[in-house]
Image 1: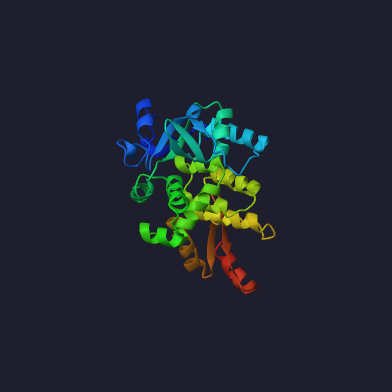
Image 2: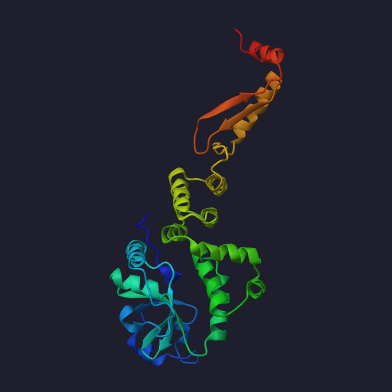
Length: 296
């Protein structure tokens, strides 16, 4: 799966020319639309940290782990920069910036803020969220920007984009997933529904366990949700997930019920062709009646 890197922005990203770097600083400048609302690749050499960044300590082990993830998957969530002449100041994402340098990257995907771009950015993001080709992570990132950079409330955002607040909340929660899982959603290997089942688990180890089970066993979203419940409640009897029965099995169960005149169930385990037939009887007499159908 680690070979399945996914490019950010579905073609929106572009290496900016030296001329555009120098000439575009405000939303009113020509070429500003190349920046606002889009993801662009920016050279790490042109980026500098915010001097007023309240965070001054960065755990070296965590940075090393993030750098390894970036080597494998790329930068899943772009950083946000403020245009400053031909340079760019970090607004958010300094950890990703530092880890990208450790990983040996030359450029990093970024959102660019320009002077007086608030209204233009809001229009671009709201328009972007209506696109049909965005994946679930791109949608979540756009919601997050509208909340954090534009300053919308979830209620305002819900009305603006015509989505339920719960839909927006569940979407943004996907950004708490680890990069491997986010990348799997972006590549289509798993769905956003699988991601929501995974994020329902607070423990990172259990999240990884469920993610591995989904991939290994090709679990459906419903099966993944059932597995997450079992992981959250280990004292619950570990029953195998009941697979959805094919119509042919349902018909066979009904025919057997009619013939034997007792309740007949056909059960199959998830992702398996094996199964069992369960016959219910109320007493010894009914059992003998069932057995009589099988006597030669």
